[in-house]
Amino acid sequence: MIAEVASLSHEEQEIRLEQTAPELFAALSEKKEKKKHTLPDLPNAEDGVVMRFAPNPSGPLHLGHARAAFLNDEYLKRYGGKYILRIEDTDPKRVDTDAYQMVPEDIGWMGLNITETIYQSDRFPLYYDVGRQLIEKGVAYVCRCDNEEFKNLKMKKAACPCRSQTVEEAAELFDQMLEGKFAEGEISVRLKTDLLHPDPAMRDFPLFRVLTSVPHQRVDAIVYPLMNLSVAVDDHLLGMTHVIRGKDHIANTGRQKFIFDYMGWKQPVYRHYGRMGIEGVVLSTSQMRQGIVAGEYTGWDDVHLGTLRAMARRGIESEAVRNAVIEIGIGETDIQFSWENLYAKNKDIVDSKADRFFFVADPVELTIDGSHPVTAKAMRYPGDETRGFREIPFTGKLVVPKGELESGASLIRLKDLFNISIRKDGGSYTATYAGDELQQARDAKAPIIQWLPAGYGTPCLIKKADGDISGVCEPEVATWKDRMVQFERVGFTRIDAVGQQIVAYYSHR
RNA sequence: GCUGAUAUAGUGUAGUUCGGUCAAUCAUGUUGGACUCUCACUCCAUCGACUGGGGUUCAAAUCCCCAUAUCAGCACCA
Image (cartoon, rainbow, N blue to C red):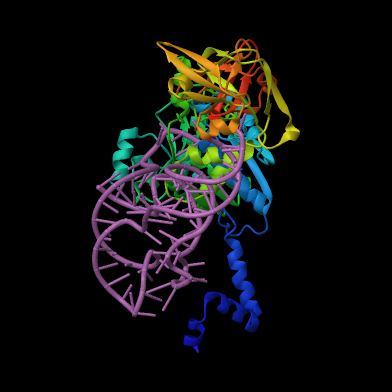
């Protein structure tokens, strides 16, 4: 009987199964449906989820943030629930005033469905409270050891002297810390974990520190919570059900588990995605800032940077970024982010919106012998007359890209105009009218190139990461400010500024 | 050094849960072609991968072991 089934083709097996056992067949089909989900399902999520996006406000958001933000957003979309934006500003050294402004802007650009925003700097009392509780439970102590010393002891799985202090002593020291009786660097609160834990990263990590050298912009504090404490407290208090974050937090998940267990709280479900390398752009906030200060970059939206605002300026749509990072998913494998993939996604969105225009790089003027004035009609979008035409008047003189002349072609088709033949005399070129027939140009395999009447085009600069291109473009492009146009045979660009000179930011081919 | 994880075409990804439907999915990319007054779009074709070695089994991308490589953590950063 088994052999009989095995002898059937896969399709036949499915048909038979459907006939004999419809409920099994239904289950099979359901399993196949699942394949359409890009992201894997989350456990215990059917009744809705509470998730978070928790950036550190040290600068504008970049591609790395977008991955976390969109991944969470995608699950919220699937399961419904609350999406909390939590500004993790517990380290004044890593807070940038402008970021309080820029982060929400970037989130607006991404179009996240944030339901609530909280600032950790508003919640210091909550952290102190849990800190005190941990001390009272006897699972946290105030450590006055030198950093190096402690590290050495930790590596040897040995306890530091402070660990044996009584609950009363610890509570007293904590109060003194809060009163400002200790200087920066000489004291911290540590959690008693397990000194014999095989992973040194788990052993007695710090919960609070004293910091007085840098004031915080939003809170007046002497004692600052460290991230494992503040994150554990907030994840619990805010009712987080699922946390998706980078694998650099894997060890923190283990550390935070100690806090959850001591407090009798239930830990959320965690997923840690792998590290994402991004070719060619600077992602480190501090490096970007340095570069901007040094004048190396024009600002946070410089074309060389991987910030979301830099991409927006180049005409990358947030939906394209979303599609790209969702496709990458939450795998724990380290990956290399590919601009090609992102560009392809962006082109999907942008191609049909962008009208086509002529751009002439490095214009060279030509007088066309034997020609008569004529007005060219060029389609705004190929194959769609309803989008209208551009009318370009030719009166005898025009400009073409220098590179095209240097390519050595003897017959050239001026797109939407006519053919010309080119002759080179020493360093200069002469051009002669060579008929209107497109077919003739095709037969001769003549290049079809973009052109503009002499003195007609508007100066145009295309900003590109690997070098700007200057030339002239059709004046009508000025009406496309802040939108995408395609310069034929150059690529898609976002028109950034118009006026005497048009500035276009290059996005991709 | 210690701890943990990961390894599928150039890139990303599906398949690994529970071995057989995998001669391995989809996208991007390469190359060629069709269409086209753009090197765009669309369409057709093409190229291209289970890290290596053992083992279990009738059968391994899938399970086990070893090796290698990569990554993360071991901060009074997040």
